[in-house]
Image 1 (cartoon, rainbow, N blue to C red):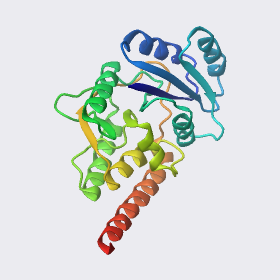
Image 2: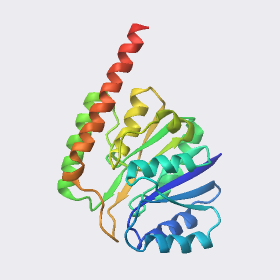
Image 3: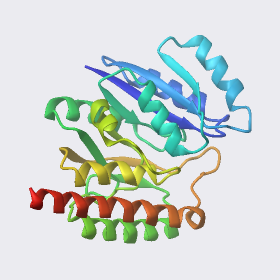
Image 4: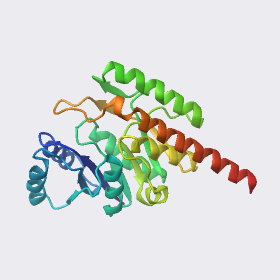
Length: 241
């Protein structure tokens, strides 16, 4: 069993080295590789990454070919070589203990994916911006109702998948953060198996968030509509058969 950890990276010169060291110190007894996709950073991220690459053997530093998170994730999946793929954010908002739990759950349960939720009883969330939290809960509730699913944290990036399952979900149509909505919705509508588990989330302490609600709202709505139409069409096809 093996794991590819994909880290999309844009202007994270002050934290990416710490993120890599965090993984290296904490993930043991698992065969893994780290794949960092530099998404056209305009600061010194590229220089920092080049120095990291020289000192660590199981890390790949890849320059994105088309700007955007969607493209970065697509490229990371393509370049990954392990059975399982986990998306881990560069800002240290994800808990490494949850990553290890993800790996154990997907391996033991033989599922296509494990979806973490920051909004279950055993979850821990620290310093989540209030306005963003309210909008998140409203949007995720709407998604749950449309897809008739008990899951409640679709927009969270931090999840794990079988690589072969991700390849079957292609092509990806989302260009930005909405890729993290597209992936779980395709898993659900196409009847792949998944496990839900509580996870922790900590607001970043270094750098600025790249997530802009006003800029991304229409992109999320587009992805939601696209995936909902796919779900409807899939259902009709099954009935016609």
